[in-house]
Amino acid sequence: MVASSRAMGVVAGTRAAKVKNRAGQTAKWALITLFLAWTVIPVLIVVTNAFKWPLDIFTKTPKLIFEPTLENFVTAFGKSDFLRYFMNSTIVALTSTVFVLVLSVFAAWGLTSLRLRRANWISNAFLVGKLVPVISMLLPLFAIMRMAGLRGSLLAPAIAHVALQLPFMVWMLMGFMRDVPRELEQAALIDGCTRLQTLFRIVIPVILPGIAAAFILAMQYSWNELLFSLQLTTFETYTLPVGIASFVGAVSVNAGVACAAATVTMAPMVVLGFFIQKYLAAGTTGGAVKG
View 1 (cartoon, rainbow, N blue to C red):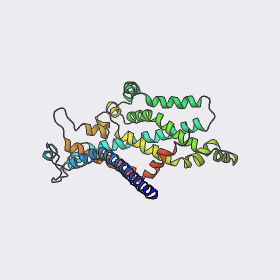
View 2: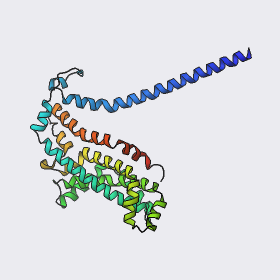
View 3: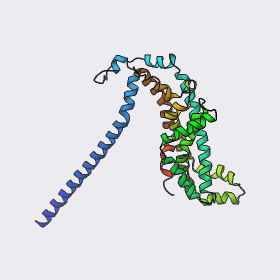
View 4: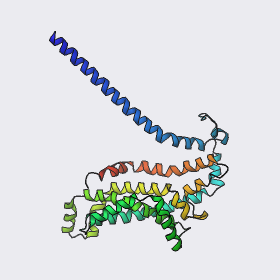
């Protein structure tokens, strides 16, 4: 009887553990599904609306089965300045990304590898700069660009994007710099390398995943940024977010054309993310080991 009771207890405990594990798995997948729906559904709405006629877009209930059309894309490309907006965004995003990567790599390397006084204080100051509300920097940057004669040029939003992204990028890359074994740098110096040669031959190849992650984050931010691009550009230098916003009027909204333009705008970042996703995954977690 005692053995039978123990066996029944073991079976009941096993069943309870299985039920608990199953409930945990169900809850986990429910959260994943909810997060996926929260992320993907708005994108799907934008993409499907890009292929809908206006009457199919403005229906009380979403119309899942509809006759697709390319008229919105034709209007976006042929009857607007979308191609010019695309080129402006490409120039601004690439320029700001290159500058922010170069400056952040040198700044992070100087604060971690060189024996600078108050290096920790300076690195914390960079992080504090990221905590400042972005909207509060609009008026000073607007005044600076106007006094410098840069407002209305493509260089104005590029400089603004560099200023906005630099604190976080320096702080992010410092984590990767701290993970580089000091023995590698010391061995390079013993072999006759200069400080700069050590940076380019040893440090940068080691932290390449972090640089790739910084690249995609900087590109994505500059590509999608609206506020500063709107205030620092003119009609000739509008970027894609500003151009898409122009489809929204005070009285009417050209939703189909706006969604078509937004779909084309998303495509480069999606393709870029797929190509370097392995570096992005390693880069966003690798710098958290130390520091």
